[in-house]
Length: 289
Image 1: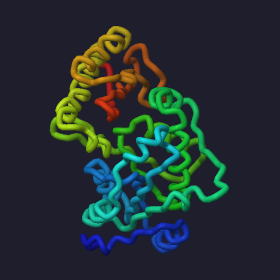
Image 2: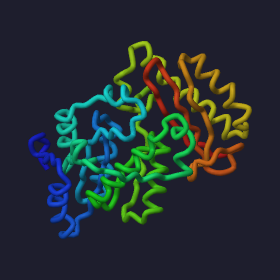
Image 3: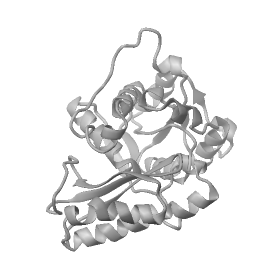
Image 4: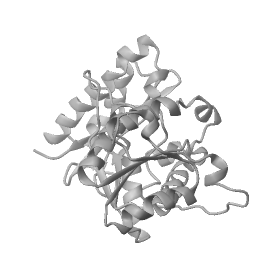
């Protein structure tokens, strides 16, 4: 399609979304969905490019979901620029943008919640109560509204990816969840819409999260145990690097996020750390050498 922003249809209602996608489905065309909250960066565009490779049609969504924010100030600070986002999507070849309003997603009388226990109870689930209920509720709605063949999620939000996979499996939603590798800045910082909130001095410190995690992941792969590396040594390393608070630095199984005492199965090292008022998360795959 044309790279012009005006060529990208922007739909607000589920009725219009289904009307637009129905002819594609009838023609036997496959649909890839890229759910986002906007403030798009190269990580989001990597999801879109993978969807375009895999599918006949690519549909992006932008919805800043109030149900997944545990802090009102975080919701109000979340960057929004639909015009810019639409231009980026059009330039990459997206076929359609679905950008509903809050009242469209959660109309008066809305009373349902999709909750996935177990994989959502650790890590982010401990520090952001209710967050994943908001994620799974809105993702479930978006999947049912658009009925894609595949939906694309970045590995940067690894726990979210795992929770969504569990939900789709448990509820028999006929969609393939496709993970896409984390996109990073040249200095290793994982791309995030929240990175714009970092001051210049904080931005200089931010890549050290990935650097310290990479060092620890290599030591874990060599046989060191999490108990000897993560608490308190690993957190002290991050503190010395300049992080003002560390919510967690932990080793969990890659498939079900069970805490691990050693790397005896495919694992992920996951961390959440603060620089001032900005919270950064990251994760690294770990396998025993």
